[in-house]
Each structure stands twice: as C-alpha cells, then as structure tokens.
Image (tube, rainbow, N blue to C red; front, side, top):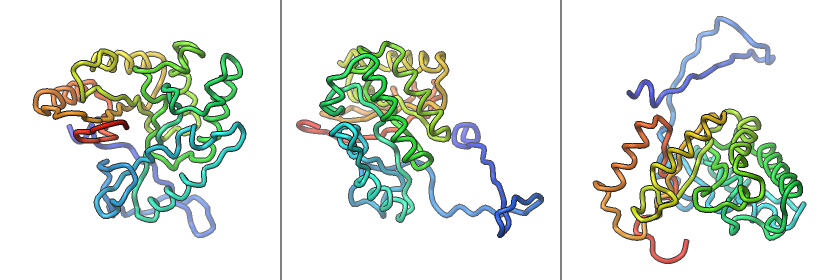
Length: 254
C-alpha cells in the first residue's frame, strides 16, 4: 500500500555548468529531510514540524482589503522564514465562501464584476506564488457557505479548481471543511456529503484533489468512535487526506 499511496513520480533534469541539458548522467539522491506532512499554523515550531500553514495572512481580506492595493509583504516574510528553516507551506486560502474571509468591496459585487475580481485574485496569487506552496485550499468551506456559488453559479468551485490547477499544476488542490470529523450533528458536512462533493469535482474534470479536515474540536471527540472511522472511510475513497487545522478541545470563537 505504501508504494502506491505514498510515492510520486519525479522527473530530474541535469544541466552542465553552462546550463546545457546533459544525457547519461549518474544521479545520486540523498534524503535530507522528512516529507510526511505533520505540521501546524505558523508559530514557534521550527524544531518540531516540517509543514506549515498561514492561518489568515493569505486570505483575500488581508492581501487586498482595498480594491487594487494588493500587499503580500507579510506572507512573503513568513515564506522566507519557512524556507530558511527547510519547512514547506500550504496555501490557505485562494477563495472563501464564508463572507468573513472576503474584503468588504468584494462582498458588494455580483455577476461579471465579481467574476472579474475573482479572476484577478487567482491570477495575482498564482503569478506571485506558483510553485511555492505544496497545497492550495481552493474555495474554503463551500459545504457550509455559498457566497461565490450563489452569485456565480453552482459550478463556480469547479471552475476555481481548474483555474488554480492551470496556473500552478504541481500543487495539490484541497476541498477544506470543518465538522467532518469533529461533529456528528452538523448535517452540512457529513462524510457522505464531502465524498459526494469530491466525486462531483472529479467528474467535472478537477485534478490533483485532496481533502482537508480542519479538526476544530469543541469537545472530546471520542476518537476511536468518530474520528478514526471517518478517516478510514476517506482512505478507501483513495484521496489524499490531511488534518490541517487541528485545535483540540477548542473553546470560544475561532
């Protein structure tokens, strides 16, 4: 199973000192760091983790609070820190169906004006960070909220996935949700609904898909009965699944 689930094909190109491609070269590969993703939001953790996520700093509301004034200074500084420590990063998030993740000026848009703003957002983010994040959360929490879908149509998320993949084809693209493993009472994000949504995206032509489980536990999750069973079901769905925002026994607002 490991040879199938945990390995990827790699293409290595070798050039000489003049930058000319060579053939027949002997290549030696040495693993210098771990690659299994085990990480946290960016805090004091450089000696403990090898993958990180910017909790808010890449969200549209933070990078372009005023239309046309795009600022990636803080994400750049965070990314520089991570790269200096040999830590890879997830991109969170390209778009957010929850209005709280969108700038005020975006919330006032509809139709072609909103589509134009979304196109600009994706183009700006992907042009800036192509190849620098191993994952992208594409349209965050779409099972719970519908800002973009209600204005741009039910196929909006599929189009977002395709646009992001075209712009950054090596990144895994994630359907990121909360209460999939945390709760048995949230009817919006049952495992069945998540799997149905992933199936719809795959049938629509979305590729490089992954499942992000936020895991904001408000109470004891009884993991043997709830969490492990749901992770087990996702495993059989054969989609890469990551616990990406673990907050055990969270109390109060996010």
